[in-house]
Length: 363
Image: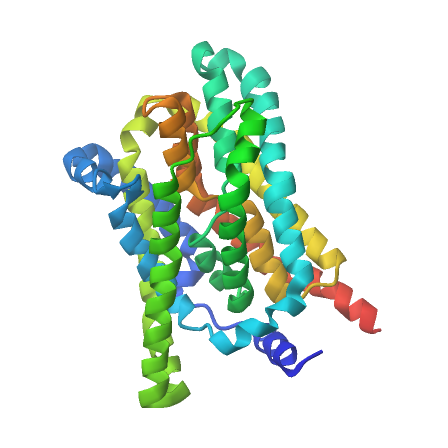
């Protein structure tokens, strides 16, 4: 094992003390969801204005909040260490396999079971196929920027996370349309390329560039101590932006939630099952392959989360703004943050179980 691995393992073995903010994060999330829905009803005009601030279906206020969340995490990345990511090939292979060989197809199966059959009597008959299509679109687009947040919350290896996100973005350009076309039975898919490329630029290229320039400046003028000081100062900003994102997302969709609560709940069921199943599969595979916990955590989270901007945009392009497909992708937006935070909690709580395999092997 290399020195980098040893130091990473030692660092992750000592869990940092959780502050008041982190310790009661579940409570803050619940309060933000309630606040978002309430504010969406009380001041709908404000949220309509924020919701309409888009370019190529990418919401700019959300983009700003995402920057505030992920730039502090990207500050931790040392470009020189990226060359060592190759030794994490088992974690990368696991994540790619779950993202592209399991996730879209498992969602197609779950949509067929729940939407087309079990829940059929409680859903509008003319929207069944459209709901199914929306769920497939959601599963076929793996998450990009938000995984930096989830990885940070499980003390994940940041260089692995960045490399995995870059690889997913590359695969998405090639594989998204064929997989969606196959599962939806369409001969051709109109991919909103402007949404895809703008999202990658806004959520990956711009924040990575800003973070690296900022990192160089801090190291040049103050050394590692200045970088560590800045990271401590920015930590509350990331979580605050995460909670504000929840308020904004639930405020934007408050009317939909109040108008169609049963449909929202029923569409959320296959999404929740798929998230937990895929996260669990990726986590178990990493453990079976002897992958370090700091890699398995982000691998499981990347394997479970979704690139909802692309899914929503594609649903609107293919089926229309008022379609069941668009609504299904919006439900994915709503459940993304709360459910991924619950997966973060599970991964952190299961650390001792995960590491037990390594201890047994050493004995």
